Amino acid sequence: MEDVKKLLVYFRNALAFSFAWLVLCVVVASLAGDGNITALFLVKLLALCAWGSICFVFSFCTKFMKKKGFVFCLTVFFLLFIPVEVLMFYLMGIFVGIGTPALWITLGAIIIASYVLCILIDVLVMRKRAREYTAKLKEYKARNLN
Figure 1: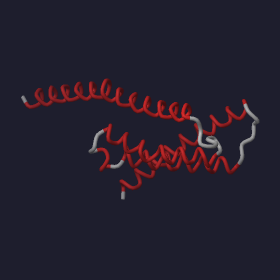
Figure 2: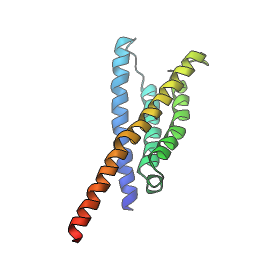
Figure 3: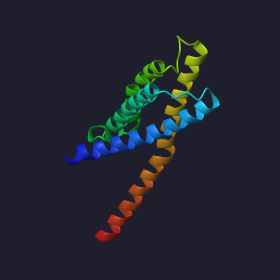
Figure 4: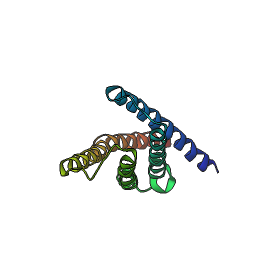
């Protein structure tokens, strides 16, 4: 039961952060445009944030997924979230029509660039810290066993 409570707290925190951030972005974007934000748009934005939060919590916070490694979790998150994100963008009116190949290539490039950036961060930063942590832990154990 404690794990369910922890997952619900993670969900609440992710939802609150993502929704607040996107509402601020929408307000700034609407000030540059026509300044019109509807309640239906905000409900759709909340639904998108809720789905993203569910995907995030499932992909990165469950015991099952933590055992699989970061790259696997990231891949699962992208596969669960991106199709729904594109669908919600159509439902919200952000995407209109079928788009042009250049727009879809741009969207794909953004997704692939963020994926590669996350993998590079994992490889270059986090694994280095993990090696340092493991070396310090072994040093500590060796010092305390003697």
